[in-house]
Length: 317
Image (cartoon, rainbow, N blue to C red; front, side, top):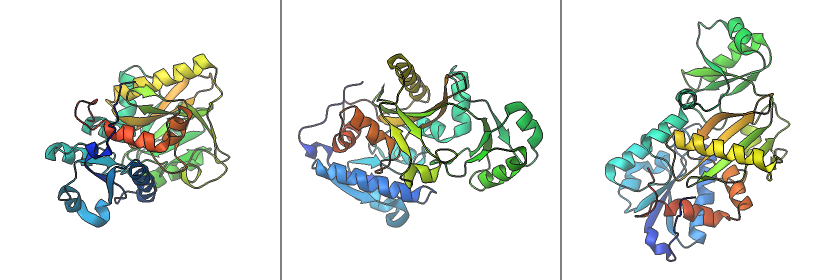
């Protein structure tokens, strides 16, 4: 892991804005994540303040005398390179990945195209539109299928399709959130997530849910989702999963911190689903869980992420 030095005096961070909320479809999750991050930073003595651009406006951020920003703004406008571009323009240090990595990771289509170009395994997929041959898609990719809007997170707009007749309806649901919709071959194996801190993967987590898949409710609301860490894989198999996650994070140009989601196919081979550059930080979230498994408590995690924005530390974007 790239060494990140956390200053002994929290005043070295200056005045810190915790950017949360916003007006994306993930606003409620972002508010919860931001509240946790804010509490963690303040617990370590950091002079941190919440800023919600949807309510406070960007003027409160730019005119607030802040020295750096902890981005916990999920979804569009916060995770897609837009806000990162503004911070680059005004020269305000910020946490996490830069403009290009953020934009690529938010766009499931371009991210999967990049995986293929880099020789990284990802489930077979196609684009859907109003003129798609639904039966042809099923004939090529089989059933079940996942239908996903390209530019949403937190499983918003995603459907698992069990029958050919349901495919068009799933596309109509996804297109409510984004004009670009992809359909993905189903992986029948277990689902895993791997947090990345700096350039090194933390212990993998296996996800188990009685839902059809790991949807929004299973992620943030349900109490019956199981998170297994240790993940149950043999040591060499988990190591292979972690290296693949590191390669995927590096391929998109990720930095600072993030999370890579994977599934195993029917032959037990890992397949990359997506990269998240501003993962959830709620009490149900996976990055804090993986950090704890690695001996890193939440307050230590957030100051490590923030410390990467200090001069002389690894580039934050």
